[in-house]
Length: 84
Image (tube, rainbow, N blue to C red; front, side, top):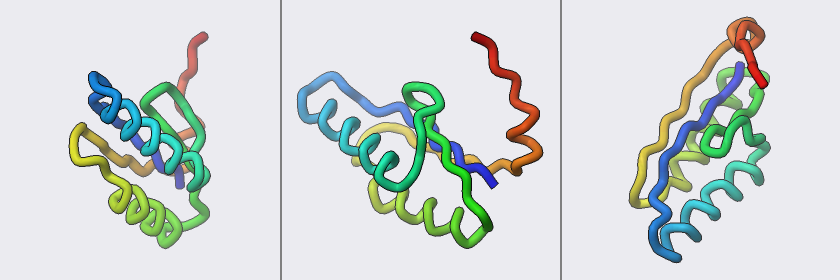
């Protein structure tokens, strides 16, 4: 199962930029990889691991902004079309 984390965080002030950077660092520390600038992904072996990762994300939520987590199967992930 793949976890996608989508986020749109404010970055107008120095404090907001630091908060956004800290959130991205938390994702990286927890094994996520950047898919696009505000989309990070991570493979989880099972539902329990995905639940634990979702909980970690929830604990790291900034006060402002929008964050969403989406789970998809490995088969669904394999159907993603990437264009360069």
